Every structure is written in structure tokens, then in C-alpha cells.
Length: 346
Image 1 (cartoon, one colour):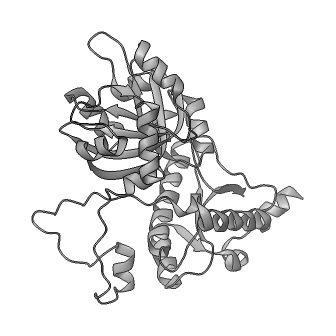
Image 2 (cartoon, one colour):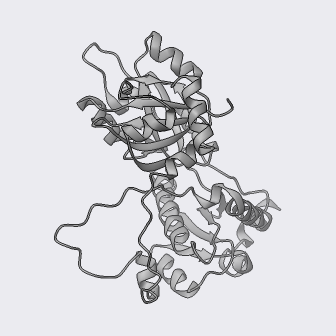
């Protein structure tokens, strides 16, 4: 089969702590780089600035399963109590003892979970063990996940026959977001903040489990628009621009005088522009922090959309409050000064 799914467990107390550290919370590449520089560089090349990850202690069973794992395989996390809360797609794997020890420490025997695997997509799902048994074609209640393993090929084929793909199977467990079709249109301020500006409830409701959508900048139309905008930026800046700097996953950086200029590019549509620009602003601010931590004394930040969005003036003001220039290709000449950089290259 071209695509396969493996199962890994986090049901014991120790494993549940690990899950909180590196599955529920994505690990920033800045925490990985000091202990596994090649791993961090590879993940940055994949377009990631943080990653969910897991690991197994070496042993005959774990090692053989780990050797079988390939990018594009799907990992189904069993959290115990009959619940499967995550479906994750494998991006890379590496034996990384120092990194594993920095994340999770050692077990009682002094071993660590060094057979590591890193996920480039993660979907929160709400699956019960009966659903998973039925999907794989297991009969009765005789199958309960233990450790790290691949279900037999016949069971994997049964799931593919029923659902067509493992991702589609995960989507069957997603909780649809509430419909706001009848609600009044939110104000620009509410759009930027992500919801009404009300006081928080005394006891916030539990967030529903739902399938998390993939990043538009990495798939389909969004990927093409993102790359086209990056190329426009590169054409404007010229040969001085670089994509990615050691420890920082950005879309373009260049020098202008004493300033280190850093940018984040986002594809946008009418439906996703608020979420995309929220995310982009957070990314570029995070990258500025990492640049300063790496020794850059003067940092200039740019958030770049593929086109002018709705309420562009509001976004420009919001970005400016955080020391970021918000722009799009038609405004490069007005918003991104280049005279100093071009004189330096002449």
C-alpha cells in the first residue's frame, strides 16, 4: 500500500506527560536546534517553525516498526480509556538521543525515547475504540493498542476500502464548528480579535474536538498564491534576499543598512484572510524575537499579503502598533525602501 497507518499509545501516566509536552503543545524549532541541528534544519526546509513529535525507546519491536515508518504515513494516537484524540501525518524521523532526553528525560532504567518521529500535519479527532475496531475490521473487543505498531495489512486495507483514505476516516470524527450564518456581521475589531469583545465567562466552555484544517499556504490554491507572492518579493528585493535563516523559518530576509529585514508572506481569500493575517502577524513577531535572540540588533518586520485585504487600513494600523509593516505586492515600492540595499550591491 502507498499509504499506511501506525498506532502509538500514550495511556500510562509517564506517556501522558510526554503527550502534554510534545503533542498537545507543538515544539518550536528553537528548542530542537541546540540538540539536533540537522533535524531542525530539515523541518525548517519542510516549512515548519514548530512541530509535534513522539519517540520510542529502542527495542526489537519498536525498532522494526520505526524502521518501517515513512513520510506520509499516518499515526493514530491512543490515549487510553478507549479514546483516540489525534490523527497525525509523519513528516520525518530521526534517532536523536540528546533531543529526546532534553524533551522527556530518561526512564527509570536510564533509557530515553530516542527513536523519534515528527509530524507535519496534526488533526484533533474524537474517535472511540469501537469505531476504530470497526474501521480496521477487527471483530469483537479483542484488539486494544499497545506500544508502537502497524495493524496488519488486511486491516489497513479494510479501512481504505471503507473510507478511501485515513484522513477521510479521521474527518468522520470531527465536530463541525457552530454556524454563524444568522449572526450579525462582526465589526473589524471583532474580526481581528477572532470573536465578540465580551468579558470571559466564569467557567470557559470546553473547546470542541474538531478536524484542524491544513495550512492554506502549504496546499492547493493557497500554496500557489503563497509561492507567487514570495517570487514577487524576491524580484523586488533582488539577489540580496534569502529564504530561511539558521534557526528561523521565514519567507524572506535581507539587509538594509544596519537593519535585518524579515518577512512573512500569507495567501488570503475572502473567507480566510482574518485567520491568515492573524497567524502571519504572530509568526513574524515570533521570528523577530528569534532574530534578536540570535544577535540581530536592529530588526525590521514585514507582513505581506498576496493582495490588499478587506479593512487593509485597520491591518496596517494593527501591524504598526507592533512595529510591523503590513503590505502587499502593489505597495512594495511605497512600503519597502530599497535604495540603501541596491547601492550596497552596485
